[in-house]
Image 1 (cartoon, helix red, strand yellow):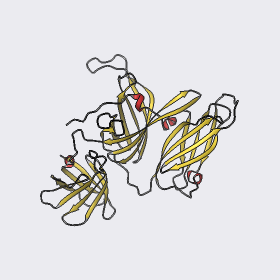
Image 2: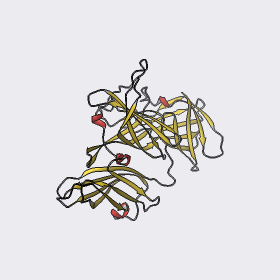
Image 3: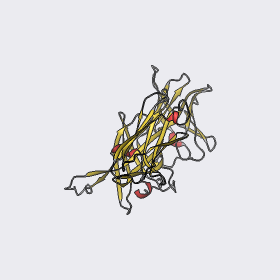
Image 4: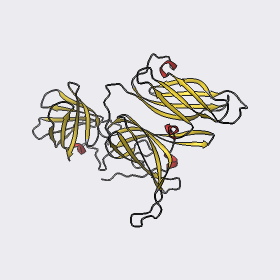
Length: 362
């Protein structure tokens, strides 16, 4: 059964981010690969009175940096500025926990003016033993829209050789279909994708005499939490040429099957189990589906020798499972997968070796 899919007007989803790194007025650049990493924040301030650092706050992995220009009656001629800081020391810690940090830079022009978001960036300081995520290619949908069951923005995601290609399909502010495309380096956890608005051309039956062209308009920062779930920040730069700020829209993105899969039967089929060691690949014929309860289901082979037991979040019953474990007969768990998508699962076996389940057929 097809899902209802309607795209959001770009005015509702467009917003801002590390877009500044693509030619905007402000940038956030991380430095250092160890626990004492630092940030360089800079750009061109709209006046001759650049801002100075005021505060740094940390909420989980959300890091906010605030700066302000306290002087008034400044000559409105843009000038370069730079702020360097160690985030851990700025929040009275010796080091920050490993993870992906969402860094926002706010700055105010004047002692009594409200600060504006000037730049945003994802900074990946995951643990050295953190496994990379392999996002599943295909259509991804937003799940945090006002009506997440029928009103979704669509992304087409294609990872290839350390690069991520993304197409965003939506509507403009007058209801006309529009789409964006971008490609960027992907390090296994995050990607910053500048998006180009594709314009020009006609339908396939009437080739355009005017070449298709593109205009840089948006940026999309992605943090992949599993092969089927990602956090996104869609961004655009607003304001005037000498005083720009960012608009930003968070997105919760999930890779869903087109057919209804609330029972979990979408994971039945033939799979191949491979490990990052010298062990031989094994083909698994998982066809026997059993619903345990609302949060759990199992899929096994016809002989009852192999069982894949999966757990799903009760608040997201149609999402891919949050985790699955592999059992052989009555033995204990022989493998655990914490990245579960429609055609691939990644995890570790009992010895800490990376293992992967790859779908062969349904």
